[in-house]
Length: 389
Image (cartoon, rainbow, N blue to C red; front, side, top):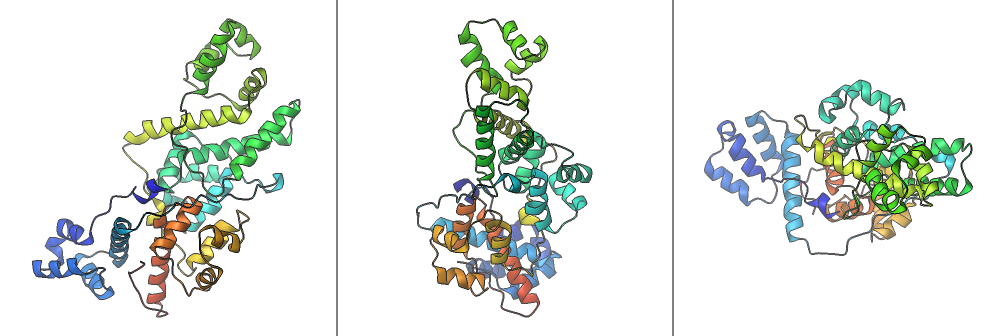
């Protein structure tokens, strides 16, 4: 979670004004010094600056809020980190495809069309539509782009794809052994029990499963590779590519490998997804057109309170009660009830706690609260305050 807190490059709004808009703003040095002394810019000041610089007021609202959060983190006392909360294990009838999860949990909440998301994510409208409808699988490149755009791990999308393929296979197990079926079921349930987002596993092996198979099993067996090739019913060329780490291992071959060497199927799938995720993050960092963060650029449906999004989009799909979640993040029932009724705002500390529990960047919740405050202010339903501490 610490990486989420420090992953953004934060600049002071005054520094941005000096570097980008000093010629347009019409503000003197004396005015800038006065602004630097303020903890947060007022609504009136932001309106003047946005008018003078021909920029949207929301740009300065979010910039100012990010800066205040950055200052809050620098003075925040270290506390015990809240563990990520686990969802209830889903039954087979509740298993959802990765395309459905992408649409309902990520694309729809942005309130944007696929064409507008295409420019931000770098995935075409046609490809997004095929992913949602289940016509295309989630490749490492697509998973990397979605991970960068929606603040998730690259491996999260690969895990969802693998778990759903396992689920489809378990619908018609054919001649699978009982031990293999149990192993596949454990892997599928463990992926879906992680909740809305899975956290990256630091310090784990990132070796290709083909190379791991070669060094740990085949070489130590003393049996020639050509015999293993016949056993797995593969051409020598394809078998060589797998052992050298040049191609992925299909699911049916993974099942056969785990059966031959008496290992868990989930071990090989996890090993492959971890390798593909780390390779994607390494290879695609040089992309000329990098995906942008959609979470922070999105125009959400601001008529919804942040607590409603928390309950409807996160807690209910994870089958977690409000009381259990409030206890998990150290919030009393009364305080959570006030948050539920819109009488309490999500401040910086609460955003950090919710972010740690759900493994989501706290900026997501801060921006939800800020957008709702702006909406309420514009509708004349409340005052706009840039202080969330």
